[in-house]
Image (cartoon, rainbow, N blue to C red; front, top):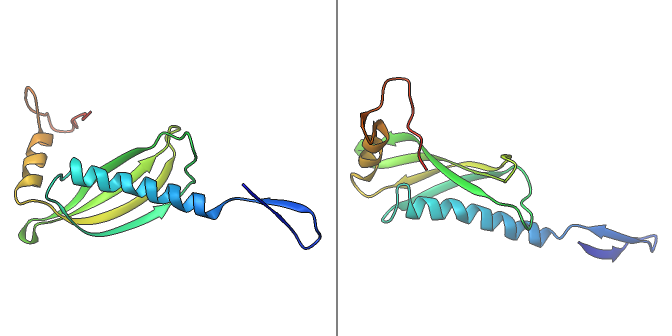
Length: 131
């Protein structure tokens, strides 16, 4: 918090806008890390990102970034991703979408892995649990 004097001369407190912006950038960078390192992974070309910051992130918060493929355009080798971050309370702090160009064949491999468990195909109606 920064302190300042109002027109009446009383001391007032206001949040540091710069600090909030830095936490927002840090939270958004977690999405970039997931896309670049995990899904789709190395070699991915980041084309666009749309983000909505829904709650403040504070010192001491634990943030989990998640990326989910919501649309594949195979003929153009594009993937639309839903990107989210939640805090330690499970509250959504960031929500958005990204458009990426994954390395050729990478997403098909990931989709095939998701459709098959370690013991074979997953029964209809069941979803794999990924760690």
